[in-house]
Image 1 (tube, chains in turn red, purple):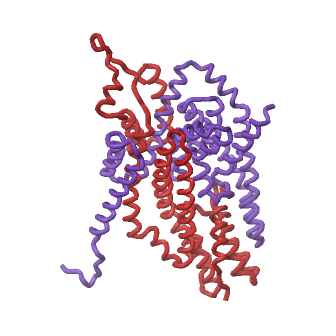
Image 2: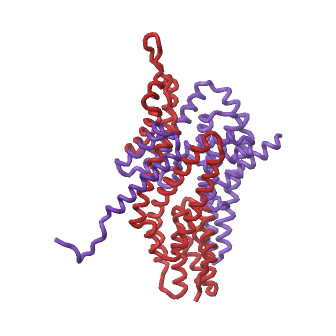
Image 3: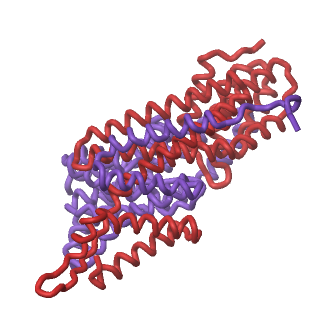
Length: 268
Length: 265
């Protein structure tokens, strides 16, 4: 009975972690990265059966697209399914395809919103605050922090996928995890509010003649709400994107237009 | 020929390659794209290479703020972040540009970089076909080479050559340009540099704010920094507390599952 060892699983995880996007193209994305990660598994399980070996390589060379660090759970699940198949259980190609296609979507949604939407911006916000006057400590903190959290997560989820099979998906999409993600979501929103206050910089150059003196508008604004113009520009951009469904590229062009016209009119 | 600048330009190009989304060598995207590829980290690396760490980091922070939301899926990308970071920050240091000018420069280079990135993805279709054929023949070695190694040669050249040349030749060009343009234009770039983070943050809000009521947390975070304490670590600890309270409330208010037998009419 062919059995996968910890070493095979580690090799397979490492192949995935490294090569998931290394031959990315528009039509196949992570297809061959997935096959690459299955090589150590297939070599072990089908070394005495060239036909099965060939079929297994082919079956894992199909379109694949998932957030790679969270998506490693699918590789773990697939490894455990291949092991069962090699030991005689009746698992045909369609089951592999349906497990992959039904998990890719939800996992990507969760992976993108928690990693790119919360984890990275929160770590960056702290690091940028420490490093804003040139101190390397914040940068180093981000590097160590991100690599250890995301590297551990990817490894942990692969092994979890192997141990629990399809049930492991519940670890990520289940109710308990949903509550945790909702809480982290609030954390993310609070921190990006602070990020906006620190990094969106807009001030007006308008001066209003007031009898003998001139009133510097920016000083007046600062006296009751510092950063108000920055806040307004964020809310304006968000309104365009979320409510008016305007693309990011168009918003970029609008901001360029505002900068040009604003400077020409002497507002900024 | 300036040998030192040439070596520096080459080194910056190599790090731009290592931080690219498809480079496998630093544990894939984990140590690459999401670590070395971030403008904040690029600032430190370029600062070390060019011998001005403080300026490098300050410019890195500014460019990072504009690229805070690089969400590669689910939204159309309009710039490529690693080209933007390595090209923009390096030229910013060499031309002694302000943060606003450096950010604007990065955005421009990022737009050009996206063309090169898309070109790589088109060329990869060829390697994909070879990997497919290898799989059909049962050749595992062929899959590994055509997935992991050969496409990287193309990716390496598409990053090291343009970024290396831009850094090597761009210094004088950018300096001359900044001397030539009127102050008003430089001022526009500074205004834009301060305004661009608003777009990135808006994209993040679009991802995170799922209910209207969430908006109040955004304003709270903003007000905390502006009115209470300009300290991001303090805000993070405060946010952790709020998140924990919300988690507790959500856990307690979830009704325990009722089986059909217990149903009372």
